[in-house]
Figure: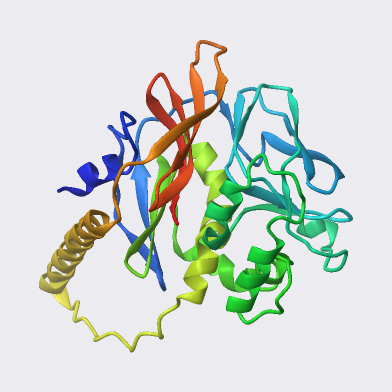
Length: 326
C-alpha cells in the first residue's frame, strides 16, 4: 500500500481524497506532520480574517459572524480566548453565508470560574486539544455550558496542573512551549492539509478548502489541537549527531544522497504507520447543507470506534475534513 493509497482510505464510504498527495514528513519531538497538497476550492472565507467572534450573550452561547466574501466553514472545535468574557469552544462545525451571524447554543465554556482572564492583546483562537475532541463532538447539541469541565480537569491533572476545568492552564501557561511546534513544523506553499502522528501513531487528518484557509488554521492545529498531546509525550532529548564530512564535491554529493535516502525512508515509514492505523466501518451522518452559489455543500459527522470528526463535501469531493483518533 502506497502512502497516497493509504491516505485515500482514511475517509469512509464513497468519500475520496483522490488528487491529494503527501509531502516530506517533518518532525518536532513526538509530533510528526506530513504536509498534504491537493486541489484548491476557492470561494471560502478563511477562519481568522473572515470569521469573527461577534458576542458571547451568555454561558454556553457564542455568536460568530462571517465578515468574508465567501462561504465560511466554521472549523471543528474552534475556541476563543478573550478579554472580559468567559472562554468558549464549539462542539461542531457549521456553514455561514457572507454577512451571516450564527448563534451556537451548545458551546462549551472552557473556563470554570471567573479567574484567569487574559489581556486584550492576547486574544486568539485555538482548536480543542486532541484529548478532548471526541468527547466534545459527542456533546454537540447538548445543553449545559459546563459539560466539558470534568474532562478538562482530568487533562490538567495529566499535565501536572491543578485539577479544575480551566483549559487556559494549559493553553496559556504552556503556550511558549507549545508554540515551538508551530515554528519547527513549517507549512509549505500550496499545502491544504496535514497528517499528524504522535510517537509513530496516527492522530489526525486535517484538510482545508485552500492553502489560505490552512495557513490561518496552522497555529491552532500545530500548537493546541495536536501540540498539547505531543508535549506530554515528548521523548528524551537526543544525543549529539555524528559529524558529517562535507569537504569537497564528493562530500556534497554524498550529503544529497543521504538526504534523498532519508526522505524516501521517512515516506515509507509513514506508509507503514498509515497501514497500521486502526480501520473499519464508519457511520456518516449528514448534519447540514448549503445548496447555494452553485455549490452542494454537505456537512457530515464521522463516527467509528477508532475515528471521529466532521467533513464537508461539495458534490462528493472532499472540501474540508477534521478527523482524529479516539
